Image (cartoon, rainbow, N blue to C red; front, side, top):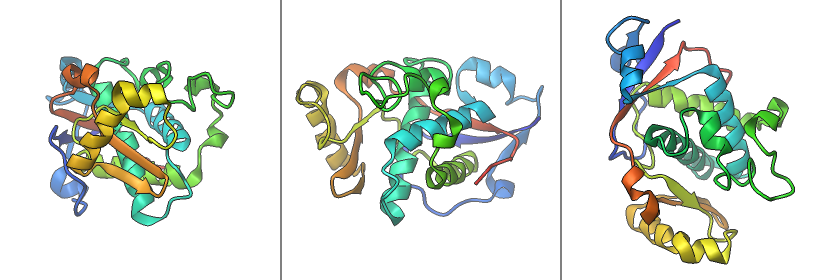
Amino acid sequence: MLFIIASVSAAGNAAGSIPSFERQALVCRPGSTYSAPVAAAGNMIVLTPTDVLNLKKIASTEVVASLKGEAFTSQTHAVIDTVLNRLASGKWGDTVAEVGNSRWQFSGINSNLPTAYGSLEKMPARHIKAKVAREVDSWLAERAAGVESSVGNHLNYLNPSYSSAKSLKGWGWAVVQQAKKEGLVFGAGRAKHYHGTSADNEPWRPGEFLIALEGLAFNG
């Protein structure tokens, strides 16, 4: 097993050109300076194949797959980056599964909606949307190669067209304004996600961290 490691900035901007693995990535094997000890120190996320699978499940329930072009890719990237930021923050758990299964955080996974799966474990892999899966693989490869988060270190997003009045009043409208100010609106038409951080989550915004992928095997 080997890990592909890249630095992730908390500031973050939309991705530009894709650096090659040879130029940007540091390949580390277990026992080297940047493997398990760094992960234990809390500044590296090692994504296992199960983590990647769960990211695809979350994105398949959150991203509007009918979007085209940049609207689709940017929305997918932003969802993935938000999950990674939440994982780095430690507030929602220590694995992608724990983050995704947190109550009321991803309505398609764990909410009172009749269509919610109840947990990531209960969502069949066959329900992963192929288009979304390919983009998740592509984006994770870019992140591991050194591309920064598309949402900085923000922790929240919402679509005000489908959010409850309670959520909008409590934190949603503040995040919408934040997203507009920082240019963190992804999607098109009524299928737009507005990214920012609610006031209660501000103390949880993560600092810089590293991303590592186990091996280089992607399905996309």
